[in-house]
Image 1: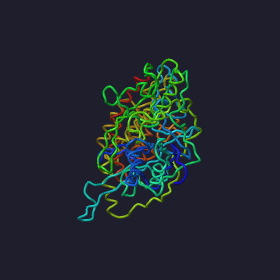
Image 2: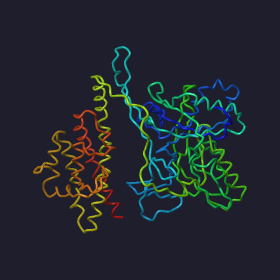
Image 3: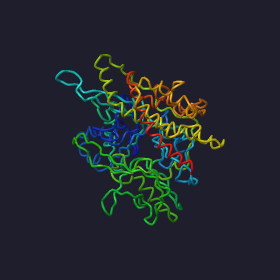
Image 4: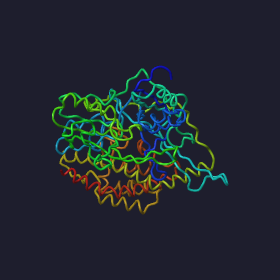
Length: 536
């Protein structure tokens, strides 16, 4: 790269292959993928040319003169930031389209709200989440050339074809030649990020962007003199140490962010979530110290007397330099009073989650070995997937119960006449335990003998509401019996639950039976909880 190198450089990362950005470096247990790329990955890319930096290597990699920021999603062509933790929506259906910022308003007494989930927001109102894919592989036994026993594994990864934005911040004292070498190391050729870089994952192209502005202002935002309240938005994880004990800090203090020490934390307007993770250092082949952090998206609110001009400037200077530890890894980015705490942009529609992949996906290999491996994997996952399927139907049924009960209350009808009772779910549990998977549909829905179709109790299973909680189809009459038929037949499940179905069709009745038994065991407790909730 030629020409003057500014202190703040905006980067664009284009994923050419699926990229595994693991939330944890654990090699066993449930694997989760982040929806961003941590700054430690970019630091690692630059560090691969460590020897070429000469004497400047100390300043670049150890003295904190270069801060490698996290890479955040670009959705629908727009750079995004994490949704603030203070944004809440309606319980059971939190949505950005009716979000409220609890850092500036207080919910009404008895109002039931839930935090908006893991989403990303742009200042024009677009929002969404990056696309993730699941890839399954197996290790091969070198002796016989067959799949190694118990060595089938899978990864969740960010799908190829998506883009992310990041920033590199250079200290004013860092020489221009060192800045240029950092950028050349990252942009001269494609790089590989994340786990399993040698196994068809992680190829990425990084380029410098000069004609776009990042979604948040330079430094740490603007703090005006005279303010008596300051809200701080965590653009990245923050690892803070208590100066008195040397241990990780659990409660934010104003002086940690450059505010007067006599200011106080406003607990009711502060929304923090804590976590811990340890980056893996490939050069030392070991883990770096664990980072105990306040998660990105958090909101911290302090109040006190009016700030003087010098105090406001001190706060802005502190935030511009970053706060806490591991700032070279992308931690410590905090912004005061950003636009996402001043207003909630109201989107007209969901943003496109990601552009079309630039990589042509490989066709599924054919052959007896692949078929056997897939079936073996599906059989081992039946119990886990059945529990997840049951949990999805549990939420759908409770949502349907809630709407039917509200209608019954308004019409003066008995709730027991339009929804199955807890005892009726006990009957479903007995049928699931004592019936072959292939005969479940007959045992439950046969017109003359079916448990959910015949007798006086059958009416409660057939009461419908014009909304399908699985597919979100408005105007589609749906009853509890309809939902159970979808479960038993493994059809019309909606996009989220469809992913749980095994590829082998003959395994689906077994999955449905396990899920039905689990669902029937869960429902009496949930119905009792809903009764208590709607009494209040």
